[in-house]
Image 1 (cartoon, rainbow, N blue to C red):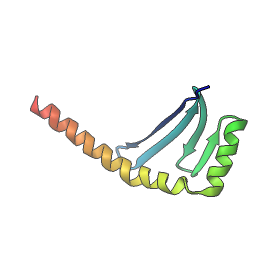
Image 2: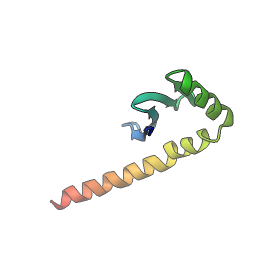
Image 3: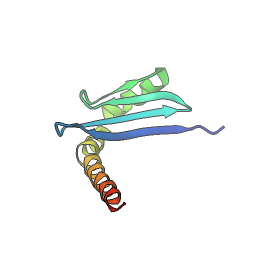
Image 4: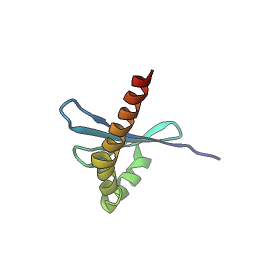
Length: 92
């Protein structure tokens, strides 16, 4: 049958200018993997997700682009869209 993968990813720009990123996967409505930006590691929610966790951490190819996304792309987009929102509100 069909299965569902849900991903939540994004960033927050804190008041002191630091960026906090987050990434979380769910599979069929259950938590699967969460990425910890501070330790650059994944937290697996069960035995099935342990396989993916080990593979992604050994491979490393997921971590580098994710770090770039959190540190550069996401904050840039967030600042851009916040400014669009402010401009739209100022017109009203």
